Structure formats: C-alpha cells, structure tokens
Amino acid sequence: MDNFEEYLRQGEPDKAEKAKVWKTAIGLQQVDGLKPSDYLIATARKNIEGTISIDEVKQLIDSYYKQHPVKDTENRTEEADKVSARITEILSEQTFTFSPIEYLAIHRRLFKGVYNHAGKIRDYNITKQEWVLNGETVLYASAESLKATLEYDLEQEKKFNYNGLSQQEIIEHLARFISYLWQIHIFGEGNTRTTAVFLIKYLRKLGFKEVNNDLFAEHSLYFRNSLVRANFEDLTKGIYKTEKYLISFLLNLLLGENHLLKNKEMHIENDKTGHWKTIVK
Image (cartoon, helix red, strand yellow):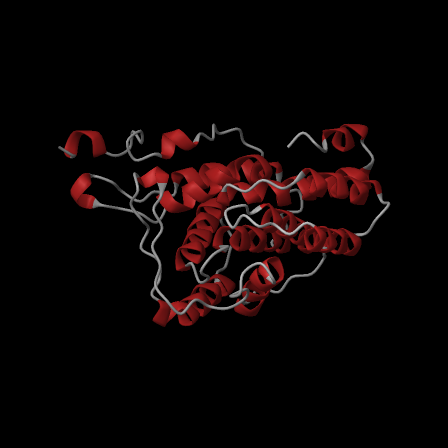
C-alpha cells in the first residue's frame, strides 16, 4: 500500500486525490484476501500521473488478461485487478442514487465478467465460516426474502431523520444501518466490497466530504470482521452481537478519531465483553 505515497507527499491535489481513491480500491480487495498485480499498480500510476484515463486503465487490464490468461482457478489476481479499477472509476464519479437499483448496479459494475451472477440477487441460501467466529457463520437473509428486505432497509434509512442527533448518535445509527444492509448478503459473492462502495458514496451524499478512506485502504478486513461481530450471537456460549467495533471504525473514518483497530481483539475468544472462555467447557 506504499505504492502511491509519493503522490500524497507531493501535495498536487489532483494526483493526491487519485492516489487516495486507488489506495482505497486496492485495499478493499483485502476483504477477500486478494492482492492486485504489479501490472495493475504500474497502470494505476499512469492514471494518477494523468497520462491515461480510467477507461484506458480498464482497457489495458482487459487486454493484459486476454494475452496472459490465468490458468490457476485459485489465482484471483485478475479479479483483484479488474475490481480495483472499477472501484476507482465509481468512487471518482460525482453521481449517486440512494436506492436498491443503485446497490445492484454497483455490484454489476464491479463484477461484470468476473462473476456470472454480477448484479443478480442470489436464489440460494448461504453460510460462510468466519475466522473471527472460530469457524461459525453469520445467519444471512433467506433467498426468498432478499429483494423485499433490501427494499425495506433502504426505505427505512431514506425516511430516517438525522436532525437533532449528536455526532456520536449519527455514527451509531449509521453503524446499525450498514450492519443491517450487509447482513442481507444479497449476492453470492462480493457483498462487502459492494457495501463499502455504496457506503462511501452515501456518506458523501450525507455531507461527509472528507471521509478518511485510508481506513478502507488499510483496515478493510477489520471493517468486514466488525460487520460479522455486529451480526452474530450465541447466547448459550455468552457471545453477544456488538456494533462497538464498527462504531470505532466509523469514528475513525468520519471524525478522525484514533481508536485502535485490531482484528484479533474481535475474535470471540479474545473479546473481553463476552464470557466465551469461561462458559464453553
């Protein structure tokens, strides 16, 4: 993630802004353990320097993988490269509509040609083993209710009145909203990256123009794990769902606070707010 630091230090506003967006886009690949190629980094630098457009970046990446097809199905570098470029494009646009259609469109734009279900609501139920939960899974929304649940959550947020709330109360509400939205897990894959992009765009709409996107660049895995912890509980083992980690992330992101963000502290065996160690025999 130090590939673009020189542009941030130089102080040229246009280059610095592009470098921040690229750092965010690349950092978000970490939520699925993906790392972009050196070719993507070199191509991104050309875009930051202004010698090629984002459209040309995408064309070069597409051409590169046509000439160098990835034969190892476990190698997801192509996905990381293409999705990084597409996130950069979307975050560079001054457009946004707070709607289910926008949410689906972001997924389609990010993963077209990468997943065959890009932009499509899943028609099957899913589980995902989580390290932070010792291999347990969050209970995601049922395939039968996905569309209605997405529409309901976004409609409730659209009606919500932030007037009179303190900054802390605003952050706490946003944590609940984004936690509920993510828990739907409306797509087969790519939910966290889609949710993060949607959130960044929505925060800008709410007036948070100076969002510290370095948090997504450097702590995207923490962001995902905090969403997991906000949506998992097992009362028989003394494990309680908590939004405190997500709130810490958002306080750093939006208010520039400096809460320590460590993934290991969220692990159910290390979380001091629960009693997992003492209850489980």
